[in-house]
Image: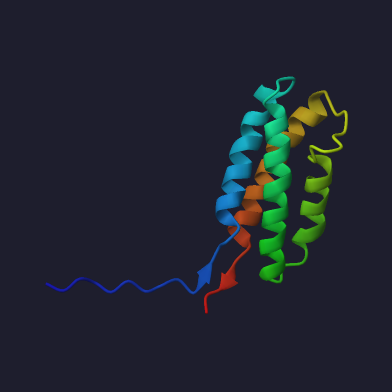
Length: 111
């Protein structure tokens, strides 16, 4: 009996893995607020936001750039904003969902 040939995908989702990492950190972020570990969440979110934005540029999906520019600015660890309260707490999982949607939708055709 012959093995069935697998048909390779015509697209690859380069932003998927960094989006999953950022989403995982952001879903845990509300529990880390007020803790030293929240700084790590800021660094991770900002860096992975730049990476996902770069994959969006490579995929020619320019509409993601302003979305991730806002995420990178708001979650920047170098000059952090003094956000607090329920809106900031709710922003963490909201940004995680944005990362997950972007990771699923940003794709490029395989050569």
